[in-house]
Length: 315
Image (cartoon, rainbow, N blue to C red; front, side, top):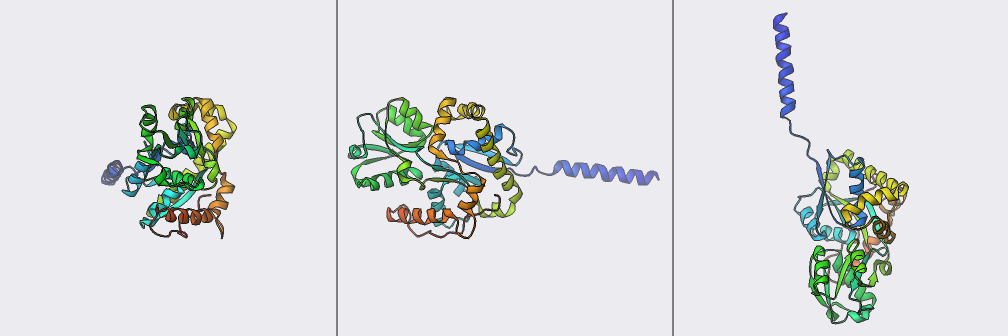
């Protein structure tokens, strides 16, 4: 009897030690830059609905750095604009889009010095553009819609986190930027000469994951998507409390946080389904349009009009 008890104790101790030696499950790293449309992710973390033991939010100064980290697999997931996702697709990086964060309707803009009052006045001026990300697309489309070309301006290639300083130091005459920098520059007297309202539906922010991450982590991805919609509900029901939380990270006032979301549409779960799911996902039409425009303006080097990347599994 004594030997049996002894054996059981040895087994229990061995199991305990084995359990202690097991590595913690790796958290999925989700990268973003600073942008109100991604802020509900951080709000979800603050109100305790994002599973912090499974997801680690990583903030980068610019979208270019997010793209670079995602390409290098320093991130399992990233929040990017759809045109940026197409840059990944053309390089044969297998990805899946599992959530639409937002559709820009004025939150992205070209801001210029007060004496520059229209896109026509930008001819010959120095314009700060984040060349490897959304900025390149916005300036190209803004010029195209105003019958101008890149030859008409002087491009200054700067990461988006450098724009505000360059503007203050008179190193550029205009910047292609977005909230919350947009609000801060407007407060300093900058003039808005173009916004995403003039290209509605073309700037769409999405949550993208590496394909192998999608295949291996479906339960965690579902938790992330659910946390996103819980945060949207919280923002809708408690806007002032949510704004107070988000203001600290965005470095603007709670009032300006709420104002910054006026230029964004945040699709609910039902609308997400129409964008990502069904026989004819609405986002597929957007992808086809973006692909054509990007290729025509030499921002893409091959067609990516019909990639199989849209996933509605978690909606």
